[in-house]
Image (cartoon, rainbow, N blue to C red):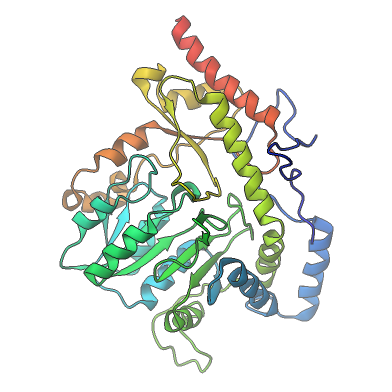
Length: 396
């Protein structure tokens, strides 16, 4: 099934297609790249005619193709990344504390809490904005059973360093890879690191199934427990082995997800080209910086995020977002507020200490539009609006 997206890079530059955002129109933060609708409707008709609507042959095919792409032994399709995280934590039979970054989407910590575990928030690296090795090490205590790190915006964590810490302390290691299907650490795809990695397939991601998630692991026992767990913990005889949940993926979602795998590397290549254009156009703006990507790694650029130093730029990230909105440009503040200051986690604040880097970064971040239909002209419009916002401050 063909996927519609801008033509791939040629000789180091990308061709822009005419289907970008018309000049003067609103530029959304993101839009999903989906397969040809007519072909998908035909497949949906076949699914309906088959009478198998969930957890059937298309789910198995999607899992097989995802496993092949990621180079892992097992992929388990689930209803969401959140349910996938809940399943791996439950399947691992953990207790006590799990170390998580606070600079992440709330679902990372929610999964820990739903499993009856206590999230212990740790600070981030100021360059990559992923979990800090030193902060993770400091957070380990007698009750710690696992680390759950996040590949923030699709930037791979320091998986080698985290693996060494986990092995040295005899604890499990998992990754919230919601943003990172297609990311690479060197030549190795994200997916096979730690005990398991869990991906999201929601509309803002690079691989889209409308809703859904994928658990990737090389551990046979963990994989089998996750397969049973997504169906209430029932292996088929209705004698539930443990307390699972309904986290099955429908055949419709699997068909869309499998189609979305086609052309994935070309789409990621194009997203990286868009990110390069952003960097080129904004590289000399005072008070504006970009998170770094480790040498040799590839990010999916699920989000194109910049950091705004109010003292040097002239206005805050929040104020910049308001001015861009006036120009018809949608933005988000991923991730402000960080999880540890959310009302849902107030009871844990006293025991987690101060997270200075997380709190500073959260006050500075703003994510700019980036999606498969964006063109260089659109990027120039966004970057010009950023510059204009600063120029108004200087003129004032």
